Image (cartoon, rainbow, N blue to C red; front, top):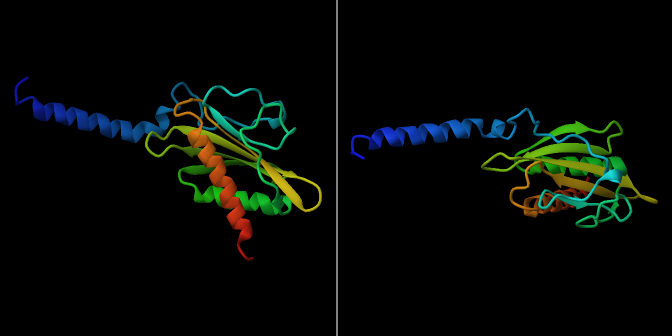
Length: 170
């Protein structure tokens, strides 16, 4: 390879990097697959594909085995839903795509920082007895790259953010 070809090769590499950076968000939608995986029914949720999700749910709410049991909150349903919405807004690279008609559930698409790989997060507030509520959260993706660590971190951050939001004085 001659030294006169080096600038041309560098130019091609830089151009390729720029093109990939520009289309990285759409790259995951090749074949017409949307970023949002759509609504799920927690009650009929099946077993997880390896590394593709993290589920926080109370015992008996779903047929799937939860990865963690979420805490109980001393808040009414709508107040907890607002706390989770505020928590989701603080996490980077997220977009709310749907809110349930009763206001007790929402769905978000979060993207990984560099590759912009989409993950869908569904949150459902579950009223309990008295003034207590809990939550079911599923973070899942079409592509099982990276294992459950990112899903687990996101679910735990959402819960911690909602707890912090509820602890603030009104």
